[in-house]
Length: 550
Image 1 (spheres, rainbow, N blue to C red):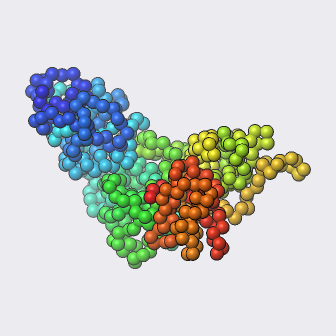
Image 2 (image 1 turned 120 degrees about the horizontal axis):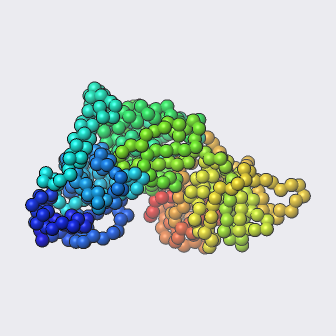
Image 3 (image 1 turned 120 degrees about the vertical axis):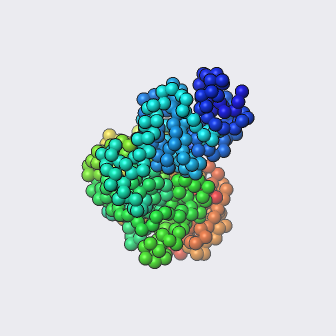
């Protein structure tokens, strides 16, 4: 059997090899390829006939698990942001399709992008992989009229003829010399805005290729590059002046003089979604000199802190379209239409919710104390009050400074194992934690921390909001005095009963370091035990989670 039918055998199309050959559907290798196409998101392990090692890059892409109701235009829109789409074969009976890009480079960019952002159609995840064929031919196939009509229409839109979408050709002409890079300033930063949050918002309007975030003049700013100037144009029109959260985190957007961003590191401050091979750096991502020059002088773009690795996902689900619900005055009032382009992230309930009190259950009653709950939950917000239930010490109420911080703590700590127990964290029905009445027996189970000097986020717009990470076995240490050595810090953790697997000072700032412990549970307990530990010289150790590894 000729190797040119491998893809169609793999998708289970029940047609004879003679019929496929005569139809001329694909041109490709002349021998059977015993290879497994690499999925774009790397999460699908289902095996097909003839699969083995990953296929090399090809401009023909194989798309699987497409929902039944998806149209040809929606499938085409997956590839459109990356370049011209030259052909499409829909196999609706098998929930699959083949998409041919104009160049192999465009196909590689597309697969790389969807490796970092799971593509979705109609709220369902799909899988994109390289085909083992170099060209897709559908001239002799029946029922290709709709696909070819959609192909022509979508490519017309891509080249600037936007009449289908209610725009004019002149709009496309006006954008011909416009940059695809936006400069974004976030004013009134009272809630955390991370690289991921920006990606989730701006990806609604097109394919985001690169993001660089930085602080200038005590303002959180970002440079964001789209695949096309048209995407940047629509995003600026829709989002400039809008609030991410209620009455705060206002977006100010303008076009950058830069035409492209040069990202050197993939971490919490910068990301190139088309280059998965970039290093994470040492928590100190550098910005290309051309970027610094665009703002007048070198050195004015600074990294406000040293937590390396990828930023927090904040527990937002990946679905189609941008939907920020329950935020009066925030992006929820935009009424944004759902785009056809897949791979969009949703931000459900991102803003302040109704309640700032958490119910924590399944605590270890032998270990639990108000203090360790204060320290652990204080990583994600300012804890005002803690109450361990008198007759049921496996349960506690924790009152955060506001509902957004409660949501952050819940999303990161629910399901984490602490002192041998898996925590369950939910929103409480209580609106506040009551302090015991005078003379009421309490056994020290209720504490008021509203005036604690250990709050990480008491200053509005604190840079600590940009340093929020999920629990990990690697801890970020800061506020280290010059006299403290690597051995001193290792001994501190080991004497407390923890197994140190790795340690590294930051190259550019020895006031900070990373320490990797034996397990996630150990790291959580070490943070509880050693945060605010007195190191001498009027320095108290600050401990937080990092997404870096050593």
